[in-house]
Amino acid sequence: MAGEDRGAFEPADPGFEARTRESFARQGAMAHLGAALGSVQPGVVEIALDFRPEFSQQHGFFHAGIVATIADSAGGYAAYTLYPAEDGVLTVEFKVNLMAPADGERIVATGRVLRAGRTLTVAQFDVHVHKAGSATHCATGLQTIMRITGRQAVRG
Amino acid sequence: MAGEDRGAFEPADPGFEARTRESFARQGAMAHLGAALGSVQPGVVEIALDFRPEFSQQHGFFHAGIVATIADSAGGYAAYTLYPAEDGVLTVEFKVNLMAPADGERIVATGRVLRAGRTLTVAQFDVHVHKAGSATHCATGLQTIMRITGRQAVRG
Amino acid sequence: MAGEDRGAFEPADPGFEARTRESFARQGAMAHLGAALGSVQPGVVEIALDFRPEFSQQHGFFHAGIVATIADSAGGYAAYTLYPAEDGVLTVEFKVNLMAPADGERIVATGRVLRAGRTLTVAQFDVHVHKAGSATHCATGLQTIMRITGRQAVRG
Amino acid sequence: MAGEDRGAFEPADPGFEARTRESFARQGAMAHLGAALGSVQPGVVEIALDFRPEFSQQHGFFHAGIVATIADSAGGYAAYTLYPAEDGVLTVEFKVNLMAPADGERIVATGRVLRAGRTLTVAQFDVHVHKAGSATHCATGLQTIMRITGRQAVRG
Image (cartoon, rainbow over all chains, first blue to last red; front, side, top):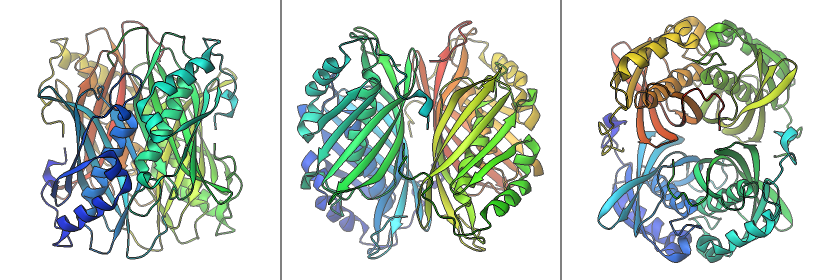
């Protein structure tokens, strides 16, 4: 979907990759989970997470909330790559469909910007779970992200 | 909303509370986060989480994914209270609106069943963040949950 | 839910009710469907629609899209009641759960503002279907609405 | 997204196209709107709608609810193409992001199945608005659809 938009985004900040990696490194939640930032391109970001028993729900798979946490971050950082250097990002809302059990050793979430507006960005995210060499598309979602200009801290 | 349904649910299993608390205790993700199960009533469950630096996003508030993790669990367990003893629960999808920054010492998520169908349950969840004695309604969402009968492990 | 916020909203425009009714009357879609605006209070709006065969899906019930159309309008106008007189409203996104078949003579959608921000408003909507004197809660949803200030026509 | 799944679906009913077109023709809402069924492939369906003043919201664009109605139908029929001949389809829930004003002469919605489960199907839909020879991706969404086997009429 939205194939016509892929790769069409111009980052406002040429230093977008370093800036994105720095912000990611500062996030307590991402560091604590052990999440790793993969590819960082204009409007497209990948985040990977290896399984640990502490991420499990009652069946031993990745908890839906952990899947959503990684996915939300991937979408948010996809938006962030396109922002001017001084701006921040806040998730307004997201929706996720958990299409298959996240049963595997590793999940990889890819966030992609579908539309980059002045105030709001729409991103989609997809999560694949990797197990014994094969990948299953286990979750997909849509996300609305708000640009926080400069030092403005309040939402809305 | 749905005020006419509150309290109208009859749990299929009179031992629903003990069963819900046991399932919660087995969840790696909940235990690891340090989440605490509060009130467990038929169709209504509360989960609380105290802030730790490792839950933070870039502004130092609770990460949206952590908020969603607690909220998803509250809705899922709300559905679980109404199930027969041998059945399990899987989140099909959820949507969350993050209405205010989750800036505080503690979040409390309340999951409430709106409709309990044979296969699918619809729940809503609300999250309040507590800071210096006052509470802010920081997130709300809707969730579709699937009942997994007996030992059936596959989704869909 | 969000019971603490109900009735707490102050409309910026004391003429909000007349302004809302005028805007509703101008909407081609609402007039064409034969939808009727019911109660208009600060942050809460009701819209009703009587069944016609042309609203039906394959089972003869109200089509999900018709239910969503009425619900989206109820939420959008709920936001609109709180705006200054010169501002407009655009739906950014919404999500709806269709909890029961919309099988009946009439649907009534109620939109309620949960959070009124400077730029974004979050509303919830609920739809009841009326049949032979009883009402069933057939749909619920959440919506993000953007305020369009003055003559600004572009979104985002 | 989900590129790996496209074209991978085998319809259970070789007469899926004729069956889908017959069901579409029976829908009061689709006929009344003047919606036209375009391409019908296994798991992918297109529906088009030409603008009429009665579809407009307050700015003269296609109403968000009309966009959602067409999109919901496209996703639902995409699922329907893969079902056995005797089964029916019900939308459980959907979420739509309205990314740009639906300002144009015609909207075209494409529904695509992402995952076809035994009970639940996940579809995505995308809507483009056509104006003066160019197309804008104005809406995208995700949908959960339930299979209704045989003469079973109740949901859930």
